[in-house]
Amino acid sequence: MISKCDPLRRVLLALAALLALANSAPGAPLRYSLDASASTVAARVPFFGLASKTARFPKMEGVVTIVPGAPERAVIDVSFDAAAIEAPDPITLARLKGEKFFWVEKYPKIRFVGRALRLTSPTSGTLQGELTARGITRPQVLAVRFDADPAAQAGRPVSFTGTTTIDRRDYGMKAYQLLVGNKVEITLKARMVPRER
Image (cartoon, rainbow, N blue to C red; front, side):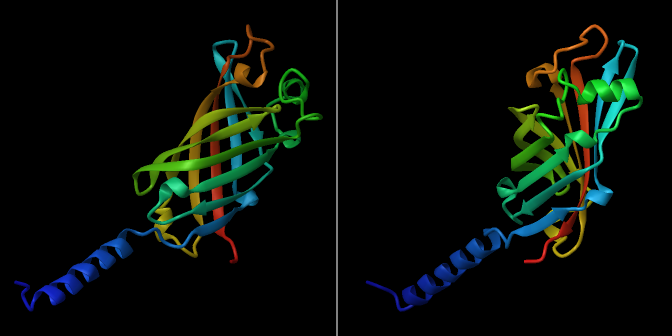
């Protein structure tokens, strides 16, 4: 025998399910452009096993999309102008621009595209993606830290720092191995500003 309360109970259960779905559903995507004037990339490499040298890429462009409630759908697409690379001295600069390293005449752009952000806290996590340098694309993971929870910053600028270590030989840069270390520490500091819809 069906109770008179059953229809009401079914309605209440359906409403509860809809509310749960609404609370867990991803929010509208937040879209940003990279503020190149407040962003930079540094690449630090051991030199002679005793010291290190740091090159910088001051010119870049990019777009970022973050989906509140679904960080795995984030996309960070950043390109660096390899020809604008800066180095501590003219000899190092010439070598870095040359064929044995970045070969900027043939490969003027470096690009990182990240498509899987995994947050371990509201402001930190890892970003899986692909780095393309010197015409070679390899999977790469960035450790990222935001200055504030990006999902709670709609309409406001957000800054983040991403760090990773690559093996330069994976990108065809095998020269001077007795002088220059193979592991390169890369630090990306980026400021993102909201894009107009």
